[in-house]
Amino acid sequence: MIDGIVMDDRRARRRGRLLRRHLKGIVGISILAIAVFGALLAPWLTAHSPTVADAQRRLIPPAWAGGTASHPLGTDQLGRDLLTRLLHGARISLFVGTLAVVLSAPIGVAAGLWAGYRGRLTDEVIMRVVDSQLSIPFLLLAIAIIASIGTGTGNTILVLALGGWPTYARMVRGEVLSLKEKEFIEAARAVGAADGRIVRRHLLPHVVTTTSVVASFAVAHMILLESTLSFLGLGVQPPTASWGQMLSDAKSYVSLQPWLSVFPGLAIAVTVLAINFLGDWTRDLLNPQTRHL
Image 1 (cartoon, rainbow, N blue to C red):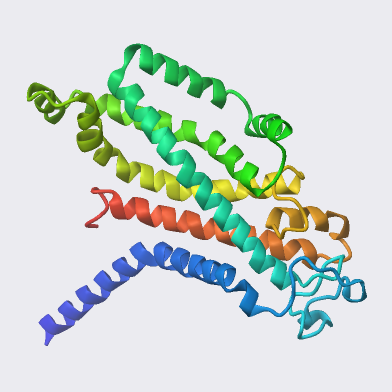
Image 2 (tube, one colour; image 1 turned 90 degrees about the vertical axis):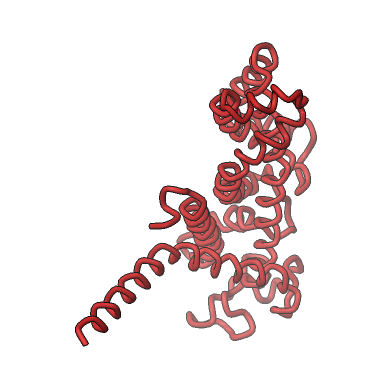
């Protein structure tokens, strides 16, 4: 009887540890799943257009504050449904953030691999480019690039990708410098393996784990940067729905119609927090020191 109670207590404690360990991942995945499905199904979830204005319905408050059920989160200063614009804005934020990471990570990883493995002149050239770019504040770099190529969703993605690759290059280079003197790399050289094969088959798999964790956090960072650029008028342009653009439009109505800024602000904060939770969970899951705790 006592043994059974002890075993049940151990199982309960083990379930509690597993739940605490995976709680961040569960919360992050759940929130992101809601955001992704809301973005994908936006045209079917609401009957309103995210861009068509209606002056007769401008600044309607949320349904629980005296508004109407047809506009559950209210309308903006042009009479556009706020829920509809939030859902369509999720498309922009998630798409831009994810694609910017997809473009910047391979460039940074490739640069870091060759800089760390080749060393000497290759390392000096790549790292000086990285240092030069990191010495320039991102907003100044973005303004300079956008002034040259113009605004828009595609150009915003390009700017974010160009601003994100140095982080991966510096991180991967540091890992490669410690890996390239290991015995398995020396053995590959001894049997005549070409440099390209060594980098692809022996070094790249060892940096994928760290890169994946950094990339998961970078998506949240890119969403914040996209919102910042759109807020400043340098990113996604109206009438396209964007969370940053919605905040910019709402800045003149903060005191009298606070819902205009509260909802897009919450959307940004909750999405970024969910991605950070997912990044923390991924890091703990892939870390050999904490995997079996």
